[in-house]
Image 1 (tube, rainbow, N blue to C red):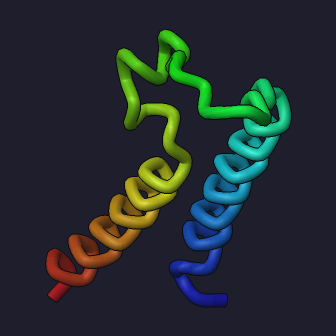
Image 2 (cartoon, helix red, strand yellow):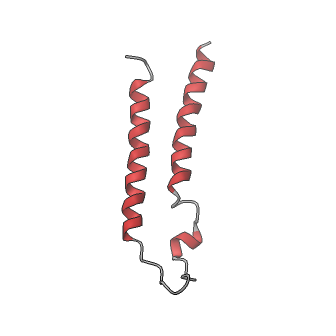
Length: 77
């Protein structure tokens, strides 16, 4: 077993948890009216539009993991 197997599995599990939580929130979202678009944006999304975006969280987790790997190999050489 490689040194990066357990951290990689941990990162994949974190990404899966982020995905499951976002799907769970999407299922609770109200349906948009059929005749037009809903002009109201909910409070938390209007105040912090990037904090609830699961793609950004997944990219942050992946970049953090890749940064740790790069730092490890740079420090060990």
